Amino acid sequence: MGLDHVSFTSAVSACGHEMNLELGKQIHGLTIKSGYGSHVSVCNVLISTYSKCEVTEDAKLVFQCMNYRNIVSWTTMISIDEEDAISLFNEVRLDGVYPNDVTFVGIIHAISIRKLVEEGEMIHGFCIKAGFLSKHNVCNSLGMLSLSPCMTPSKLELNCREIISWNALISGYAQNGLCQDALKTYLVATMESKPNNYTFGIVLSAIGDAHDISLKYGQ
Image (cartoon, rainbow, N blue to C red; front, side):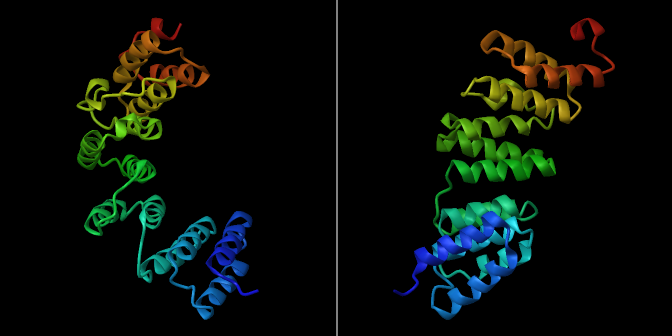
């Protein structure tokens, strides 16, 4: 019985799970010899495997050599290439591929890591227009985009008002030195959700880092 794209996808995926780079490269070579080197499913799992093994350049090379890319291909690259995430996201639309919720989580993460406020507001607007604010993972990720005083809770329009969403927003403010906003958001959150240990931890950290918040809030 001959090997097909399903066999190669499973084998490469196992290499990624075990982080076995050497075997992964051997199977990659075999996929090329067998005529499956450009198959979209095989390439997608190769990109993921090379990323897990921390050889991003090899992942990029596989991506660049693909004849056809689906949303999994684009989303995986956006998730692993933070420097080029914005340009990759723009290319997705030019390629006629529609982003999904995981794509938005990846691009939001890249933007929050690089503290790109303008791009964050643009992606936030895109999420609203495309109706992705109803997706909990997207909504939670948007909480990390509180990178400036103008990104208030009302502007972020949290539709998924669960404690995870509030925690993400509070943490985003606190990590960017917006301690007053973190505390205000915490107070709003307590009226709509039940805080958990993580909520208390991040708000106490914000209070501890702030010089202009009374100690009574930490009691």
